[in-house]
Amino acid sequence: MKLFPTALEDLIDKFASLPGIGYKSAQRLAFYVLSLPKEESEDFAKAILRASQSVKCCSICQNLTDEDICDVCADVRRDRTTVCVVADPKDVAAIERTREYNGLYHVLHGVISPINHIGPDDIKIKELVDRVAGGEIEELIMATNPDTEGETTAKYISKLCKPFGVKITRLAYGIPVGGNLEFADDATLARALEGRSEI
Amino acid sequence: MKLFPTALEDLIDKFASLPGIGYKSAQRLAFYVLSLPKEESEDFAKAILRASQSVKCCSICQNLTDEDICDVCADVRRDRTTVCVVADPKDVAAIERTREYNGLYHVLHGVISPINHIGPDDIKIKELVDRVAGGEIEELIMATNPDTEGETTAKYISKLCKPFGVKITRLAYGIPVGGNLEFADDATLARALEGRSEI
Image (cartoon, rainbow over all chains, first blue to last red; front, side):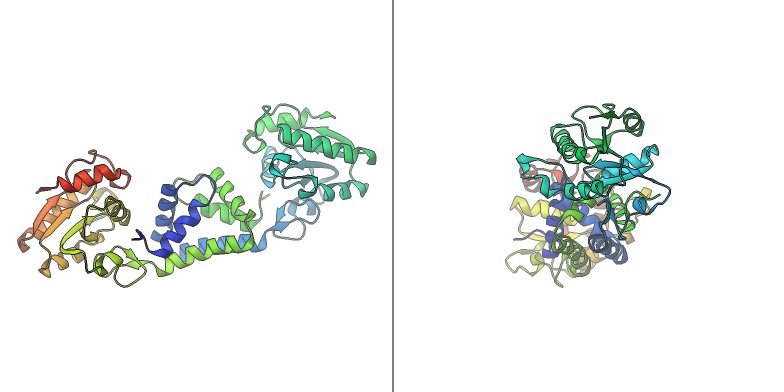
């Protein structure tokens, strides 16, 4: 016999399919959502729908946005000659929090990873090369994670973009090697931005 | 400036409002939901809506169900003279998993807890007394958690129901004292059911 009503089992399964959530946690979350007033659980459902419908990639930097062009790219006070290349939208947020950077971004949405069958065409490298070919960009700061895949991606991009005469730099190794950009503390990230070196 | 599009910030906040989910985990979950194909994230939203709309309390035992009467109460093969009183629908699931119990349930949806301003009228005690007054029930098995609040609730209910001539028993202390019924293993729960004692 089934232990919970189908709709509840279903919701538990949905929560359990999220990364890092086991069955017991999923049960707890589903029961919590059920215990909310009806308007609040509806708000939750609507937030999921709204996010999945309205969030898209900025047509310039590929960062997540709900407009055609994201806030950073639309900001005229920012230095349009410097572009910081990151793997993930969360990395943009991490660098923005340092308040040390005034250029634009390019979000790759991944890194080259043969073991996961992710090649150069599966991430937003073509869009980056097109931007560089546009001629306005003078410096690319490679800010992929300092691990094998991040390094490989940075080298691959630097090879493609150097012919356009753009200066290509790399975040300084203030970030612990093998670590994850998303979890670096703000001070370390700021130091890494200051000490960037040419590759 | 905001770090993520409003719809995404909103979704992160919703996840962060769930119990045991911090901001970083909420971020990870929200990004994961965004990365899903549109149909799958819609399914997630629909599962929340469906659960919050269709799941209600069984009109007999107050357990969660999507019918008027839950599967256990509707099952004619079950012993209708014995009722196991639990605090939470998850406890019904835990006892059902032992396959040792063939009676009905009564779900209180909480325990008496003055410190949290939960009095006898805030949980489903009146519904239980009405069932006992109906005359069909011969034994109530109190299966609230073996902590102060669970014990208090059991004693309160036993005082109210004894005048109807019903036998009132308590789960044996096979369950570790101060523990939580939801996380007891099946064997321990089965032993606790066998060794129940009158109070």
